[in-house]
Length: 461
Ligand code: DOR
Ligand code: ZN
Ligand code: ZN
Image (cartoon, rainbow, N blue to C red; front, side, top):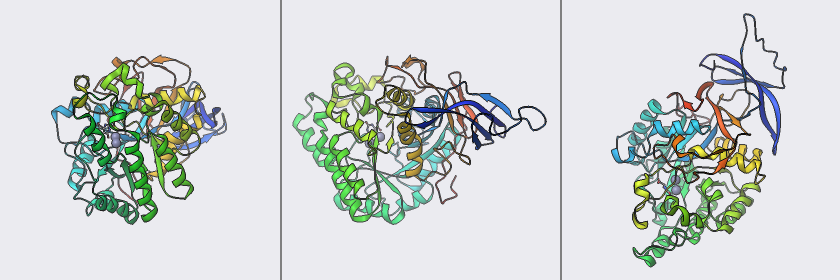
């Protein structure tokens, strides 16, 4: 059942009507697509006789479109790097995705080598197409010498361009003002989404110099909120000047939320991504987990966390991106200045967000909008992110009842740990379908069946 080319009718599926209100529907899947949705019995599909369609009982699980995670670091350029491979690769990272109910990921360009040329893009894409368990898009990286070639990489199929205006993992950095502006201009001219790692480099350097290799009190003091605010303020100004599309990755502070809220009310295309770790953990978490929870931007104060929940619920926030950034525990045990930044998160987005909805910190409707609809809309993905006729049958069956602790031994990410270990969550996926095909069931992923996403108005695939 549920193999390619096979038709089946999903019965007893709960879907989100509004807020946390559910309705029971039936969903007809034929080949890779959703071909019918209706109330129970409404589709009139025969379950016996020569035109019979197999019936798949969803047993009253919530059925969502597969999640689209617009921000992951799978550490795999397609060129083998033994050290990076201890953390993740396209196979392990996308097994983690389907196990987490995620059917599309966008991979970031800070791999070794980085995705800053057309040939690096092709090498990564061909490798991912052979090894990915879910569908994928690739970001091109902005560098100090590729602004002239960036449109060609987008034309070849990249989902957008990622620019680091502050240094983080890898060597991508664009911190010369004219060059930074050139990418905002290119976003407008060529119609791509410019995703920003928004921490101002000069501000980061000033603060790091204060500690000068001494143990810092907290990562949030070494890379403070004002560095993020400065970078987002500049991004908003460039967007106003050039009218491109700007996507602020991992927005983590009240100041960023306020800037993005007011830029939206001006009518600018500025989008806000929030990570689960900035919603569910705050700066005090390092007292318990030390460098495990060191990431860029850092965990923030409780008042910043509160402002992010407000932005999530008032329509300011557009997407949830996991910023899945695996590093080995051995590296995380190093002293502060030598430990790498980043936490894994692909497998926990769905249960964290569903649990928050069930605890009434947000709604299932908002989760659906931020995790499915909006990433598809912002990045122009064809056929993704909606439970609608004609869309890809990317589906996840979600158990709303069973409470289960995050268990590191059950994770598929190769780094093998989670900052949420022990947290008891609901909303775990029980089955995941990718374009009609069952890719996760009984705790086991199957594949690889992933393809590169297609963008609206293009024939890339
Ligand atoms: O914490 C982070 N980790 N922030 C980044 O910007 C990069 C990421 C990584 O690649 O490890
Ligand atoms: Zn980043
Ligand atoms: Zn990132």
